[in-house]
Length: 281
Image 1 (cartoon, helix red, strand yellow):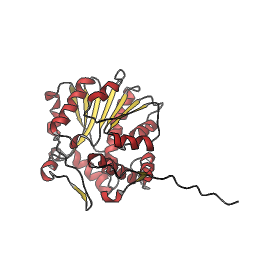
Image 2: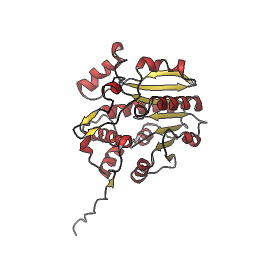
Image 3: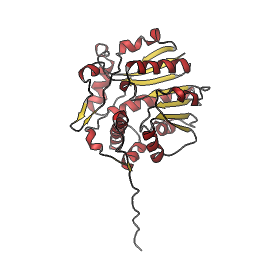
Image 4: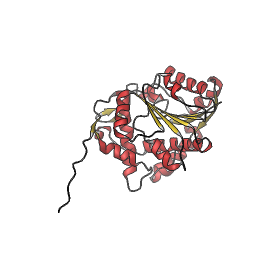
């Protein structure tokens, strides 16, 4: 008797996502591509499965470079360090999009006990719940990160690690700073990771950067230089320390050697983007 071909499960349509929410698909696409390569720089089978499960014209985003995967690796390293010291902490992923950090950290940490709060707008959260496995340690909140009621759902008794990966740059400056300030005052002893583009971006591309012939990234009105970020403890109550996080080494001469060295080169620090880790106290 011959083998029976089982029909593939229908893919989930994500074409209704637009604006900043659509950028979640762009970052997913870059990460999944890098994870699927023979010389992958990130272990992310969930990202690969997500792309295979979503009906969307991913090609319109253009190149699928290493940047998105490297950013996720930077987040993972900071979160892992915090969770090793606070194994029962709660991780809050603001505007999580289609990040799959929970499963990567679950594999990286022995006997994982951390809890996870995922925050994003309802259209994105609906797709996450359709496409990603549930866990009793995950709480999904379909709301804006700027609706601070999510803070009421966070058990901070064992520590809090907040990620704002690919979020703050799309906010107005007062919104971004208010969010940082609210987190600092609400979660003493916690930490927060976020990334920002070079400060020149908002001046050179006020309508958003062109990623390809068919796609323009939304405008990025918020950024701070490394020097401005370093001064946050003097201007924002509740921030006790700021760390300029190095970019992880990637693949090849440029991303493996040259770019990480340039990232750490003093004269370039205020001209590049930044990965920032805040300590609250």
